[in-house]
Length: 68
Image 1 (cartoon, rainbow, N blue to C red):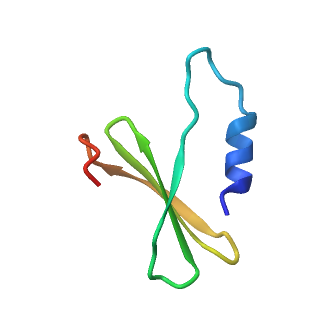
Image 2: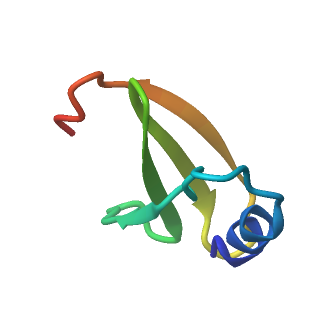
């Protein structure tokens, strides 16, 4: 579901020593809802989308110690 996003991120120019964002798929009880998270400084990026149409959104979840 994130293939297009991942492909565009991987194709983006990288600075020396920079790292790619690693997305982890989360379990969801929301039917066709697909949820992913990525560990970033200060918390998580969370991406949720409709698994069929791929319409969704992204938000930042503050969690400085990455306990989630």
